[in-house]
Length: 195
Image (cartoon, rainbow, N blue to C red):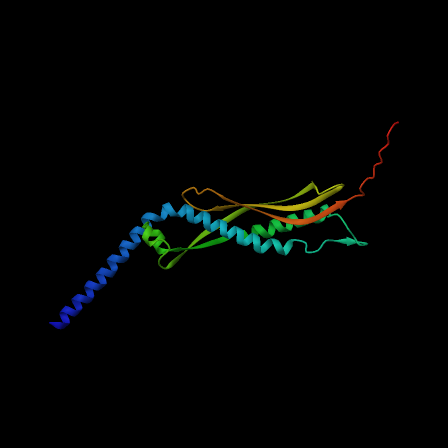
């Protein structure tokens, strides 16, 4: 008789655990479509920012070219090559899989459980379109001085292969490539009075 009760208790415990797991999965799958858009946007943005931050410093020039002690201008050809190589490298690093970790409590929809529980990995297949361009800016920097700056602008648009027609995520970044102050002689004017 004791064995029968023990077996019955074990079967009852297994059923309760199974019922709890089914309840949790019902909550998860009920809330997943609503959270999936936010989760996808956050995962793709983090993925793009990480790939850009890792790839761009490898391609930026570290030193300014000098010729006879004077700084020389940036070569248009060198900037074009840099743009093409960087676009290709960014496209290769961005395409693939983006990964995010979501606490199980976030998927239940209950505010009390937000941020609690084991972290579930969620992966997204990512395709991207990358645009790299350079912008030169001249600004006044004092009397007969001009600040010259070349900035690298990156715009990455990331797409996922989802059935729900997900909106693309756009991430932008800007990196200074070259800065210089162009200085000229300050003109000396004399005042002539007619008398």
